[in-house]
Length: 406
Ligand SMILES: C[S@@+](CC[C@H](N)C(=O)[O-])C[C@H]1O[C@@H](n2cnc3c(N)ncnc32)[C@H](O)[C@@H]1O
Ligand code: SF4
Image (cartoon, rainbow, N blue to C red):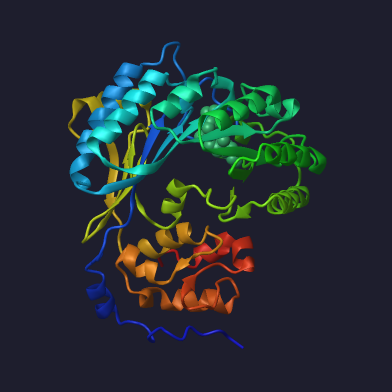
């Protein structure tokens, strides 16, 4: 029998929908801050992040001045709002000196109302760690380190073009655990030449450190990367699926809950910053290529900054807004897909009421799509939550497509 959604009206007329869409957000969502550091020791052949080979000397002073200007220019959009988390991502933020990170976080505290116990994460590459540096970052306020381990297998790491070996990865984890209360390890799987036994050794080594959080990413061949042009030999789809299943099982046995497509956490250790993205919260994004989503009572704005580090620095320092590459108000037609794209990544989904609270649209605006997704068994029939079924999670792209604007 087909599933129906009991709480919904039959659907709104176009006129009613338009009226409802004179967007009214009763309350603004939580606000986070993302800071992008664009440099790496060497660009990895699989990576399509906005990351660039670092110059011989990092222009730290200019970078910090440009960040300050970028932040100052964005402040009027968020006057008085509290900031719940900070994420310093990249690129490789751990290339920055301790002094630069201290200045950066001092600036953040001076300009924004940062919650006293805000999660402050920094991404680090195990190849850029030196004794004392993590401790210094922690003294400046970093309380969570996210390490790009990828694998502990030297042959895999070489095939990935990483700048570190397994030994350095293990040393970096020990130093991170000594320095901060919360540590995440990024692992990738279905790597060139990797079999299930190799992936098992990787996850077991990762689990042996007992960090609170793991991110497990299926290696994808991204357009415009070296790997897209010269694809390495990879495990086939069946082998990759078997590896993924084994990883999920090992993580579960070790007490890690998979709370998002790629994220696994022990109790109380979920990443608050990323969870805010998935719950369609707000975020400022400063630094080259950074994205922002900022809600106002009558509209929701998306911004992207200029991607080139040099251009972004020049333009941010000019102080005339020219570092903003695009700024668009999300239309009511865009919002359902944008919301679902994030919310349905969460295993537990989100309360149905948050759709209206975060988009300003009535749930009735997506009544037909919800019903279709439920009838196909992709969306949970519980009217109180928006949550993918196990089948929907497996075919997430098919489920999300149903919410694309027509
Ligand atoms: C910005 S990087 C993390 C920090 C640092 N740049 C590093 O690599 O050590 C974010 C993570 O995304 C993952 N990642 C990057 N490119 C990927 C790809 N093509 N497929 C799957 N995961 C990828 C990696 O696990 C990487 O650690
Ligand atoms: S170190 Fe990280 S951000 Fe830099 S190129 Fe490699 S994967 Fe990308």
